[in-house]
Length: 362
Image (tube, rainbow, N blue to C red; front, side, top):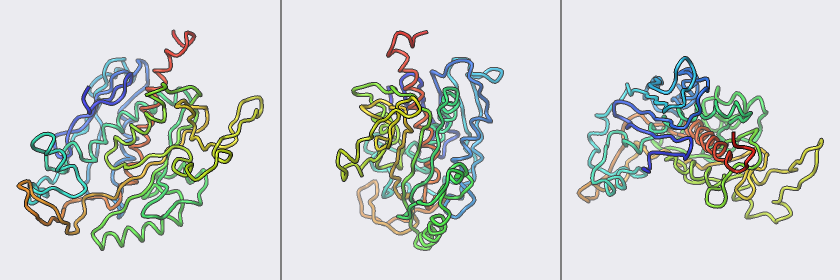
């Protein structure tokens, strides 16, 4: 199995380059009979597209999804679903001047060492544009999950050290109507100020995203090497910009005592209920029925116009200024990608769980 395929039963294979003809994916393992259209996929892809605000790239792509196979008369057929998005607004000449230089923070050097050469146009396969494939597959996965009563949502929790603290459930529900995907209005104002300062300095910002899954039944996950939290961490770390993942209380649990970190249990209205959710909805690698909560650290955008030190392919010291159209902060666009990866993990877990008991078999 190559590194371009994710999942065991609901398998997603990603293809295409940032400045190539197209990007897309093939989804194998989607059950037949799922109502699915290009509109469903487009709705999710639109969340990933650049906004018209100050933080986003000015690359203008429609990102229009075209289903090539696996859907007939509005329903999945059980055969591989192929979806493509054609690239239309590449400015490949932006990279000619730096084609022989290794960009700091990028995979230029490592791809060259692995393959002997690289596609320097926007980063090729290591470009964030590859994540279109994940969002396409996530759109299909989300539709499957909804049938089982499971929903995925998320928001940007922090950018440049500014943390979202004061917001309502309604704010969370409308987070995609905001530029930075931050539900806290005061935090948004502070972030906007930071973004403007970063633009002047020709710099970028990182942050933290938070993704939730509600309605997940207890018992999903495959101990011991394919625990649900392990699969989630693996999926999130496969997103290029993510450098750290935590579930539930995460790294804060290292500061707590067992009595504080343990989630006490009671019977509430005749049902087992965890009184807190420091576990983030997962115990022993298995979902416990509570809301799954995942946070991820997103690094600052690597492409910045500020002069930096680097070397050339001939191993000569050089300076580099990366021109082109790049996001000042990619957190808002990473969010739907992370939501998609969580959805794909959960669909795989649901399908895998069918073998755990005889009564689950049809």
